[in-house]
Length: 464
Image 1: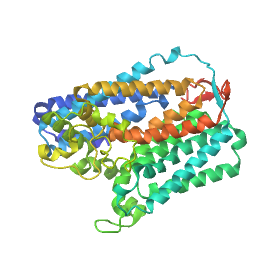
Image 2: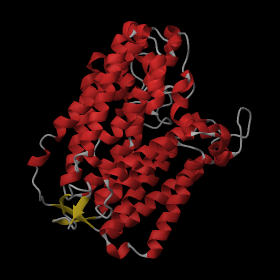
Image 3: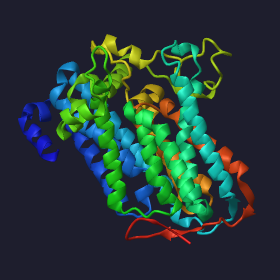
């Protein structure tokens, strides 16, 4: 990939790179440097290997590094050059706010007490609660999928979102298996693995990226934070890279899953036979319809040109969005604020519209929502993530570990789409396990498996 980018760079005229868009290329280089530095810093710290930076900066590098480069060298006919510059600068400022907030929130980590008194739990109950969530989430998905051809507006989004219970349920089951040796019977392991496979297989076969990302986060981070698997640095980064690669591949696979008009048919086997690694990495950014950085720039430029700021009202509407539509028939769509949605105004400014299902990315959404206060939003995101990570790392309470994994699982929607798109799944990933923990709670006391520290050589959790 690196030689290909270097060869493409040589083909770009000097005047285009240094005179036409100097601000873009400066911001692009700084973005790449900040992301690489943050990942390398996390890789050298056995504590941060399970933190925010490897995942967040990996996504940032692809969308605002690779896709941004492709847009600047192959899609310039669709944009005013100032739109590309402003879009790249906004993404860089968001990244700096996120990294700075993370560093500030993590700064006092070493001052936390090594041992604290907290709740302990009956892991038999946690196991049963987790299995119940997996089963209930799967059955909910099956029942909803039977009416997928009906009018979606007449169905309940609550019903649809219940399928997400599979993932926190799987997290709880894996945690219970790691904590209670009595649960690690062959029968329990086979039953759990079979049920989880059956529950997630429909999403994998239909190339659903969000569920696949969530599943991989649960499978990677739950054993590591629970302490019964000690992944090396190469394993963690390798799984993250492989997850991103498969998610890109899913975009190319989807046409092969459709036998109807416009589909190629043949399924996964046919797709893998006709798709190369180069196509997987570069395809999405090569066309306007699939380049998320292009949509990001269009949304930022449209917002800037029209002064179309929501002043936070779109995200504040989440406080009322829990009201069922049957009670509130005219309820605004998710994330709708006082002003028009920028997605609806892009066509009038840019001369082209987004495809159905396209997303403007989290940085563009924050600029649309909060105007010039958008860096503060990303600082608070980074700081909040760091606070939760501190508790998950140092506290003996397993609730914080599950909360941290849930937040990581929602990161895909936060960066590639928007805060309000990430909010609903994040609530499910966090609140459902908390209910199970509440019923499994024992008397206050020392946790059953207190954390000693982190191995410097492997970056793995060490437990007594």
